Amino acid sequence: MPAGGGLLRSGACDCLKEYGAGDNFFTPTKENYATPKLVESWTVSSDLKKLTMKLKPGIQFQKGFGEMTAEDAAWSINDANAGTTPSSIHGQAGDFSALFGKNPWKALDKYTVEAIFENYDVTWNSNFLNDAGQGVVVVSKKAYDTKGEDWMRENVVATGPYEVKQWLRNDKITLEATPSHFWNTAKVKNVRIIQVPELSTRVAMLRTGEADGGRIDLKVVPGLVKQGFKTVSLGLAGHNIISISFTGNLWEKKHAVTGEPLDTAAVFMRDLPWVSPPDNADKMEKARKVRTALALAIDREAINKAIFEGLGAPAYMPFADPALPEWQDRWRIPYDPKKAEQLLDEAGYPKKGGVRFEVPLYAASYTMSSGEIGDAIAGMWGAIGVQAQVLKFNYAVYRPGAVARATTIPWLATFDEGGTERPFDWPDGLQMSSLSRGGASAAIESPYIAERLLKVMKEPDKEKRIKMNTEIADYQAQWMLIPGVVSFPSTFVYNPKAIKSWEMHATQVPDFNSPDRIVPAR
Image 1 (cartoon, helix red, strand yellow):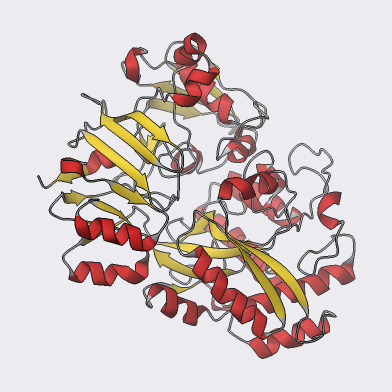
Image 2 (cartoon, rainbow, N blue to C red):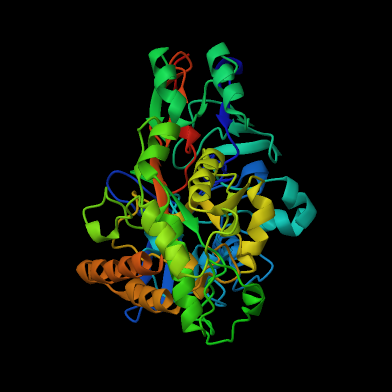
């Protein structure tokens, strides 16, 4: 940043495309959410099986590794996709596996790639291969072939408007603008992104001018605005929705697409109140009552007021929010601790010494204020006799269990499909189904959601997609697998003496993005 400043983050995301170090195939603009970026043209076969894309010629890799080609694009997506590379740890490995399965992308010629859909999705270019969604950054295969895997782990060779000069995980990132970029040449030459988990330290760095801007918890934003700081949306069209995933409810016995048997025995080895073994109707109903009771015991208005100064809003599920026009009031979860206690009694969990049972709750490190929200929920659950232990550690520790579908620790977080910026007709529930096996998930798998999702993904009629998603929301309201807690706007605070303006592109990632759009004030 200009004159010694830096951009602050709390530890949310390590995203090449968000920080301008790489490019995706499509990007959102005001004119079109799926504006072609690395792509010149494309076609999808009439049977929705084959995608053919022609890449823009002349796009150059950083560090002198030459022109981007179809071979680079195919290699990058195949390396990220858990279907073609089972060892992939890419954040969207499971999403790509759901979309393309084990079908590798192929380079047909220097600029043309071919992809075979395992499950066609109407949002393939507005979400999966997009700067705003689940996309992958295209990196240089030549760099990998000539320098090796170890070198590539430490060096980013992509096509973005910024080149990575230093990337110290959980510490800082130093970026330098590409002199001439095919999409948008940055106006600020150097950008430093610094991870500062402690809120008070981030605020102090802003006030002293040690930092030029950053992600700041909503509750202190009004005070900073009064002191002359400015705010801008992180690019989200709506609010982040924080929900609780009641993990371990793996009800699918066979993969929804391949039909392969799924080994889920591990999560049912312990008798956990919130987990429903699918072959036991009595336990299914008892666990449903437990999850419903825990959802009813949360005072969402109180959390919004205490933690977000009333600037957020109550939320009731990740992919349907009262801010959306398709919202139905029957999905609202009232604050009703008496009803919650009644349901827990009916489920067979009476109070013994004031305690019914214990439950862990992981507060995801990448979700702003999750620790405070988790503590608040623990207090509310304690009032109905459920003793909660809030776990606060890095998401990198929790994630492997979620990917392996081995965790049974409920998870408080913002999920990929949770946000009011997502159109209601978009396919939802991918990470609540076996379709995302091999990658991140909510550690929940429902055969009903998988079956409906496959239909929504292929349905060209928007109104029919809305009808089917309404049915999925009804299902979620009944079974309470991922009840929402609160939604809040993602806000970036900046010093107008350093940054004149910064209009970020729309995104589903709750972090700042597109530093090439910064207009410096000095």
